[in-house]
Each structure stands twice: as C-alpha cells, then as structure tokens.
Length: 91
Image (tube, rainbow, N blue to C red):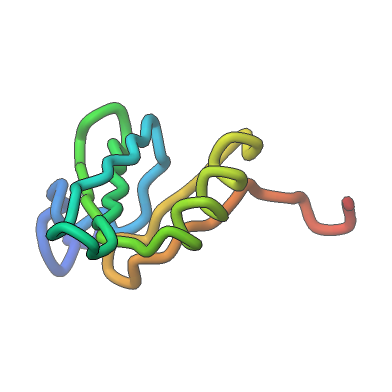
C-alpha cells in the first residue's frame, strides 16, 4: 500500500525550480537619483516566475554568473540561486 502524502502536490509546493530564462530591467529614478534594477526569473519553462529588486553591483555579478552557468536552480522560499551541480568526488 502506498502511503498518502500529507498534502497534495501542487505548483506552490515545489520549492526548488530550474531557471529557464532571465531578464534584467532598469527603471529610471528621480532626476539625479540612481535607478532601480530588477531581475525576472522564468522557472521550469514558465511554471513559476519571480521578480527581485537588486542593486547595480548585484546585477553586474549576477549577469556574469548567469551568462556562464550551464544549470541554475532557484529556491523560492529562501530566494537563493544555486549554480550548477557537481557530482561528489569531481571538480
């Protein structure tokens, strides 16, 4: 007999998803004030989307990481990016 799950599995219950696409946006600030950077993630081919507000340094660093990583995962609850996976014992 298969045990019943504690809750039904839904899109909202999946907490770690693979990044499919990303898009940076910049919104102008008041005259003389810095603008605002946002970073939109499309996860699992559109099953989930997330938009983060980031500063210019984070935007620069994330662009470097995102443009070179083969696989990226995003933990929705912790708002954490995980870049690639490496098999234990490999470099």
